[in-house]
Length: 414
Image 1 (cartoon, rainbow, N blue to C red):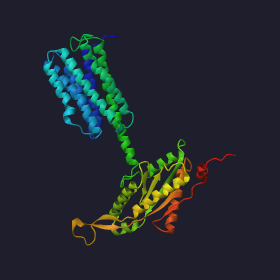
Image 2 (cartoon, rainbow, N blue to C red):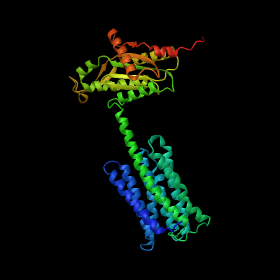
Image 3 (tube, rainbow, N blue to C red):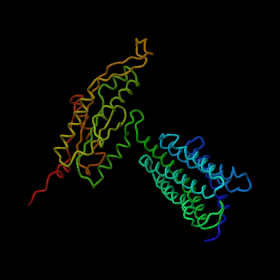
Image 4 (cartoon, one colour):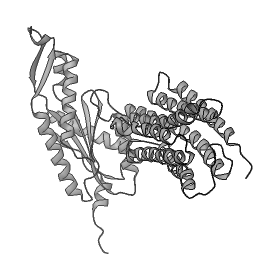
């Protein structure tokens, strides 16, 4: 391969580290503290390799000892940024101890190049392994492609960090000085350069993807109750009505609260908001993990039961059971805290009232794939208004479509 000057590679690593540090600082300033932590990490890399490249120009204590300690700081700060990004806490001693280990090792082996190469390489290997473990162990919390690129970078970094220690132990490809020429040194530091650039891009991509996911989540959540909103509900129902891989029954339960307007008019919108939060909690307690509770707006909620089995009669029984459970839960009295209540001069103007508010339910059992989302919601809504017309606080079932009934019947031999 073409001859590569190792000192020049150190200079390139310095420029790469400082350039990436500046880029991350500009992007992260006032926006994301994690990017600032990673910016500091790359600054440590840039300054560290700058000190190493100045061997013979500056005191060896700065070039050998401080330069490598700063490289160790880079790995640690990358880990700190990742843990902070994931909102995870770890024992600080575990996270920061490699820096002290490098400081001690390079002090002990200050005059022994082979000792420094072996000790430093092994510690750096452990630091990279720790970074890889963070990404893999917490992969469920990370979205998008950034985590895969980052995991690939750290995986590739493992043999790179071990290449010089192994070569030194096996006396292969002699490394007589920090800037000895040769394929091993060239490949190692070229690999570090490429990995540094790709890892920085992966960190920025990961942060961007996570921010987009958070924005999408907020856009699909009701601000007051934290439940999925109309948009998220529509998306989920559309998935069911168009998925031809699964054929079973589900149900849409639409409900609104009785006496809600009376509460708002009597005690204000804060009391109504308090009631809606309690209703959301009760609805969630009535359904399973695969079900969805969503708020359409105002005092209207929808419970989606996507998996009621392949038998029409059994699905109807299950849907009725859940609807009755919801009806009973909503009928229980609510204890609401009212602010600035009339004739209340204690507890900072707050008092607790008991409020009764039943729910009127319309249920539509369907077979998916089948009817459109609009038809299902319309049928459930019409059933709810039929129930209201008959008697508030009751349940009304919409007729099952002829297509669903026909598809549910077993074929007979001719």
